[in-house]
Length: 461
Image 1 (cartoon, helix red, strand yellow):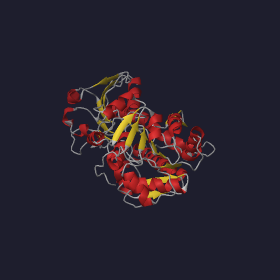
Image 2 (cartoon, rainbow, N blue to C red):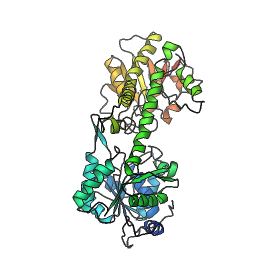
Image 3 (cartoon, one colour):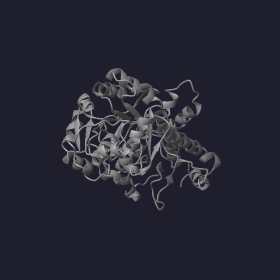
């Protein structure tokens, strides 16, 4: 990876990326010189960091987004993605150098680019993958596709999407024959809060093309984008499966931990201690119990198999989803038991929830257990207070009273539940709470002078 401050090669000749006649060295040199223009479709939390790193390396990137406010923000050198270390500075730098521009004109961007990188979301329609956003992007890319272009699918999609959807759609719209352009799946392996680090090479980059030339070109390009290894799989479907399998493994593993946590009371065992000791054996790697699994990845990816390929029995995947989806309800039951153990009147207790986002230091509410816990608690008649420094819009949290961060320790509550491990919560004066605490994220220090309960632990800690 160069990142050497290349200036956008505005006057450089545009050349093809998918070019079997070019040597590896020629393609690499052309990419680094800005002669192979790149368009990144989708400038969200993962798309903007990717576009910025691409621009830093090759100096010739157009970011595409349907949201005009995003386009205006990026075009001015500003960054709409918050709490990503180094991203605002990098965006300002590459825009100032002319290495990154932004537009909402997808077809125009496609006509100008030789490499097209898809970073748009795949959503769910019930429990089935919804590829409508991907399809809409393909329609526009196909209208501007040229012979010798390479289309890269960075977003996570069900296995076989590149082969069965991307290539036929592009061929139909562009009128090009398969083999006149290339396509590869190169799934992102990034997390919110560390996107630049991940894009630049925290983990090996996985690439897989629909043909050998697509794999070769993608490997050359990502060999410069990442400082880590590039692992070329046998085909695009395998590369897509790698990313989906990673998410499914985590979902099932967390479900195992959450299932084991339910045995804590019956066994009179601190399940978390047992897990920690079990993991000293090299063949055991049980994850950590918690109030639920959220975000746009782990709760979604199992359905990229179970929903996309219903002919296969996916009983284990569904069972894991059921366990993890039930954890907010289990958390409420633990809170009720905790209140009862401390003699709190069950008619209308006051409970303070710390964190509605799905994990610490991330402003993401999709599939988050926090709002579910709040809703379930309110349904029991509890007065629900909540604080989250990462949540700006509270209009959807009916029945929840927002508490400013600077007023937390002054609240008179019957119980506290930590549902997201934000750094801001670690610095609280826990002596200010005269109430038991359900530490759902193992955030509290050991010396807290209050009854502390955990999911899967002995009660109290």
